[in-house]
Length: 175
Image (cartoon, rainbow, N blue to C red):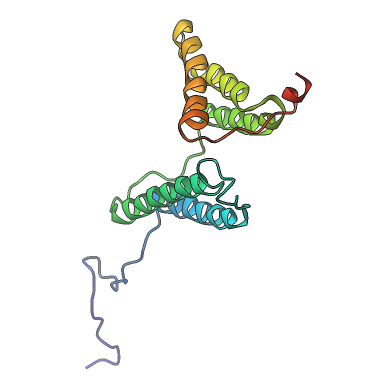
């Protein structure tokens, strides 16, 4: 007998077997990131002011954001599970977002910044008029109808059905 210990658990190539590692792919990492952000935003909703029941019109200020954040948490959980169940070791590595995605995100950030000054409806109109042509829509009649009808439907849903009033914009104080 030699002084060398006999190797056990050899793979086909003669290498010692390694324990299986949990590989985090893009879906898992993205899902965890979205879940962390949504959970943090959900915690922030506990700082919202409560309206006394006698004065409340419709739902409390935190109800709708909490609903949306719970939906985001659920979808992020599905993304994490999907990522963990994927077994493709040859999956492509992370690629930076396409230029079109970055421009769209910048338009949406600009809309959030502009909204207090020009108002919710005007901001929705501008976004609805800007993004479809950016994505390649060249039927201008459809873009115009969408840019007018969609903000009006959103306003009708919130103001009429849910009895939620949009804040007055800075520009509206001059009229």
